Amino acid sequence: MRRRCLFLLVLMLSLASIMLAGQPYQTATLLEVQKKISTVPRSYLWNTVVTYSETDTYELRIGLKDQTCVTRYTPMIQPSSLPVGWKTGQPIEVRVEKRKMFLRASYGDVETYIATCSKSRP
Image 1 (tube, rainbow, N blue to C red):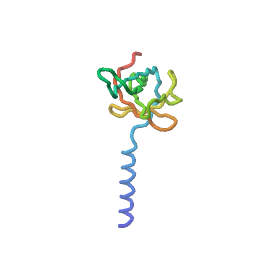
Image 2 (image 1 turned 60 degrees about the vertical axis):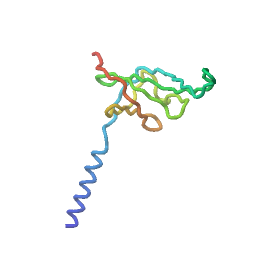
Image 3 (image 1 turned 90 degrees about the horizontal axis):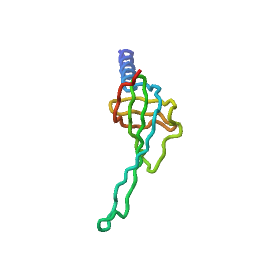
Image 4 (image 1 turned 135 degrees about the horizontal axis):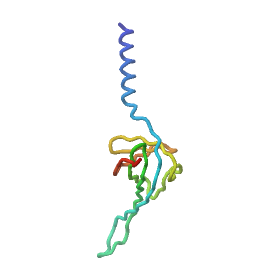
């Protein structure tokens, strides 16, 4: 009886770990990078902006096997640049989940949001 319970427990834990593992990474190509800066006014003196802050957002065009996706990445620390390994025309490891794309960087995964996806032309 004890062996049967232990076997069922191990089986349930292994199935749970398989379900939580997620999708594997696939190799894609970074096709284009565009840096966009948005300015937000912080204070006014009469009708003139006195102080403002700028937020850097990167628009990445990534080519997968049969589709091209445009994602948006806003670094948490501003101002910031792209990870060192992300160069146009270079391969990059990506994982797609619903409306998010996770890109592998040297320091971990970077979460980006998919703006559009379209089928690639042969």
